[in-house]
Length: 306
Image (cartoon, rainbow, N blue to C red):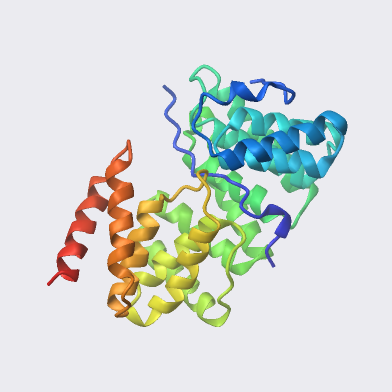
């Protein structure tokens, strides 16, 4: 079963480039220099006002952390979760939220602070996993960190595999997805294929949608790579990913719109061209252009216009 408390808790795959404190009670115009939506500022003002009147309101601190994390304002998200951990130091969920957000922050932090932030993230996640033997996502976060971090900086692929196995014992499908991630990082094609077959069989027998959004995209794409008979099921996962999407999610909107267009085109649905146009529009506006995806968009567009 998915843990509803952890819905959309962001932990992007760590891409270490090895190349914080803000108080919660801040003037809102400090963030105004960034182009956030009016809804963001309205929600932030409400939560900050609640905090000022009730600084020990744990649910409000969770909401603040989620709001800031959804816009990748990692330092303020961390500050919110640190306050949670101060209130309840042995709460596995609070430790996971803090550790996971610290790991995400390490991607963009000053290179002189990365190692310190990662070590803090690992410490909090390990404690979370220790306190809750059924906590999937603290283990999933550790799998990512320990897999991608070089050994000299604290990575440990053997321990990552140990956490994969622990996840498998908690939830079979989550464990398979963790192993799939690990084998994909290692480019072990044989084990990747074997794991994908097992994931496919499990999804066929129990097509659950995931609270942790990352897995919805992974499963949707895996189903697309199977055959067209799976496209309707793939759409369920991709549409859920889109519904729950936040800027903290790893897979971009242009990717999900492309795969939605791809599925709908081969299913004969009339909305495929609209979806592809949306994918192209976002892809061309992106500062970090994915030229491989843009090429795929052009190829699909030619097929649609034949």
